[in-house]
Image (cartoon, rainbow, N blue to C red):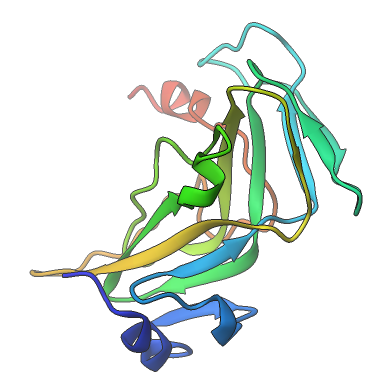
Length: 175
């Protein structure tokens, strides 16, 4: 089952933490998360799954920045989230998608026990100007059945920054 907006609000500072929390961003069954003021882009055209890929940091000024098609941008949410006993899910907002911008197309399925900022995979099909603080995506929560094993990955848990892919660590561990 998906939690309703009022149920999300009831669980704030208990099984759900959204910091900062603004009741104005609460929807009937989700909560809008905002874009932080920085992006990461990969420096190389060819990305290698087995090695760390270098990145460059881009500051989004108050007047916005233009994103170009054919480039992957990594952003992060302004909000820090924690969940206990529910599964967080992230989706782009339809208003953003209707402008041809795709946010978090993959990996929107969170894990019970995730704590941190959400790294957003952003791409666009045509040039678009974006701004810091825009309501870029929405988080919603599913209840779970059965024994709960909290997320413990050393890759992304308790992050504070935009996280580029750490897939190369899987190769180091022989998986």
